[in-house]
Structures are given as structure tokens and as C-alpha cells.
Length: 334
Image (cartoon, rainbow, N blue to C red; front, side):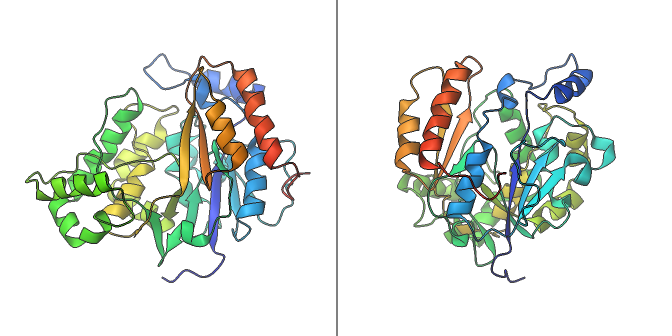
């Protein structure tokens, strides 16, 4: 299938963690189990409008923006914008999975969104656009732009369990040596760092036919809807079980499985995503704010990584610098 111009969609996930109705609903389902319900999963930094300003200024070619929430929306959003599709969980997630507070459950069902393009880019509300973006930054030759590199799974509770689950599925369906031989120059590529290519050669010569892990990034991910459908058809039971979990658990699969899948099948264009990841901590974050102010990167992730940060102080600092580079409202705002 050939991609037409202007048929790439953006999907943005958002939750207002201060919404009293949402908090009450969430409290009804909180189990006394080992789940990931950290406060940083739901804190509202009140800066989603800066993401929309970045889209309008630096990615005006996007076909549609699908804003996915449980049903609440920012008070400032222009609901009549022709490029905006407001999507409630109940609009696309099967009823038996609802309500859900599990981001994995939400994301692995995105292919069910009505009028979602075959080609879409998944964002999160901690990802921001700071420079001009082009369609070729996300898709080339009808394939998602991505980076096939090896990585070991580091035991980190709880998310490492989910990555391990993804790799378990991959190794059940793909032979490492067969994949590397078939798509050699997608794994060994001039766009990758020297150490990454060196690690590939080591793995290529290894007699172990299993993948130890795939390198991940916390930046927008380019997807094809058909990849979701294909993997659901093959791994329905586990994806169904993940979708049934109201909160994130160690047993879940994640949407990264779909990313690994298109890499295994060679359905990607070797090219790193042009962006930078930062984790906000309780220590000095001035380098992050300086990079944003100088707009050093096309894309930036400002990840809420620490429950113990002075939230109000860091929120004000972060939003002040975003206001500096995006002082004018977008047409997505009232």
C-alpha cells in the first residue's frame, strides 16, 4: 500500500489526574495487589497546550490529531477544530475492558479508533515538538522510521517485566539469526552509532538464536495500524489478558511489542527518531530547561520520573520556558 501525502495521524494520550470524578472511579477499582500506581503516572503538568502549539507550528502537515482520554478534556480545547478527533476510551476500547487505568490496555487497542489513518505516530503528554518536523521523520517508503539495535533487559521493577514479556513473544515467533541474515543492512546501518553496529556484529556471529532485547526510546513511535491487527490475531489471549487488567501489572504486554514486530519483519526504515530524552528529578533540572529554551532538539521528552520532586516548583519552571518559546495560542485553543 502506498502512502498518500497528508495521511499521517498523531495520537496523543492525556489524563487529568486531578479530576475528582476520575479519582473516585479509580479508587473503586484499586486492588490490594502489586500494581504500578505511582503518582507520576497521573500528575497533570498543565502544559498539553504547548504540545498543540508545537504541532501547529512545526508539523502542519498532520492529517488528524486523535486526543485520547477517559472522557474529560482540557477546558481550553477547541472541540470544533477540523483536525481534532476527541476520543473517549468507550469510543474504541471494548466494553469488557472498561473502565481502565492501565496505559498498556489503552495503547494496545488504538487500532480500533474510528477514522485512524493506517499510518500514525504515538505521542505521550511528556513529548514536545521544538523544531520543524517532516513526514519523512516518521515514515519513509511506506515504513515507520525506527532503529533496530540490541539491548539487554535491565531488571527494573515494574516495567522491565513488561519488556521481558514482549521479548518472550518475539522469541516465540522469530529466529534471531534468520531475521539478521534477511535484514542485515537494516540492523547494521550507517544511521546507527559505532557501538550499536559493533554490538550487532557480536550478536550476528553468536550462535544464540534468541533476541536478548531490543533498544527502546521514550520518543514518538511510528506505527502502522495493520501491525496491531496482525499481532492481535496471533497473540489474542495475552493481549486480551493485558486489556482486562485495570492497572499496569508485571504480566502485561505493551505497545512496544508492535514496534518489535515491525522490526522483526523488516517493515521499517532504518533511521533514529530525532529527539532527546530527559528525566525530571528532585535535583537540578536547569540543563533541561536551557535545552528547551534554546530549542536544541526537534523533539524532547520531559519525563516525570520522581515522585519526590517539588512538583509545583518544577511545573512552574517547565511551563515558563514553554511559554517563552510558544507565547501565542494555537487554533486548537479557545
